[in-house]
Image (cartoon, rainbow, N blue to C red; front, side, top):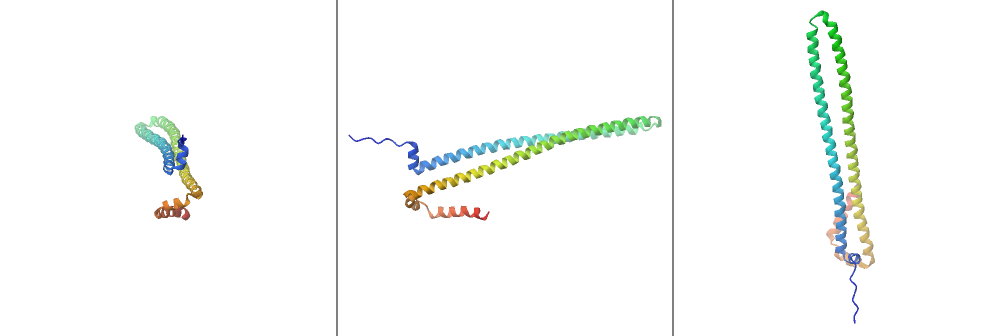
Amino acid sequence: MPTRKKPATPRKAAKKDPALRQLAQLRKTVKGLRVKLERETRARMIEARVKTEAQKARAQLASQITALRDQGRKLAANLKSALGDASKRDAARQQALAKIAELKAEYSKKTVGLRSELSHATAELGRKSEELRRLAGEAAHRAVEIIRSDETQAAPEARMGESSELAKEVAPQEIEDRADAKEPDEEQ
């Protein structure tokens, strides 16, 4: 009675079959790219939220400055009408100066507060942009490492006896493509 062969496990089958190995590699690459895309999407959403908050803060600051200017104009008009009478001139002047000083202090206080909020939001936006650049750089380095590690893994397998078979399967166009891909790195 002949003995039955055991079916190959998926790992052994993947090692023997280059199509399955390539499929697994592509799945891994797609998963990595999906994670990278999700990170970038989250980072862009955060960046957009910070940008809208900064725009709101600028709009609020502009409206408060306009309101303070209008108050200043009204106070100036009141000051001119009060100066018509010589006896009321000094009292009105003192009141106007006190009110102007109070408004200047309030204006400077509000301006400093809003500017600090704006600079904080801008700094946070810069920090998040830098973090996004760093993440993109890391993702690019990881992709290069994955590609290089895949090439180095393919090289030892070729040395194990499949070198003659793989050499026949590699088209001259692929060899030129690989050479072209390495040239920009050398220029940098």
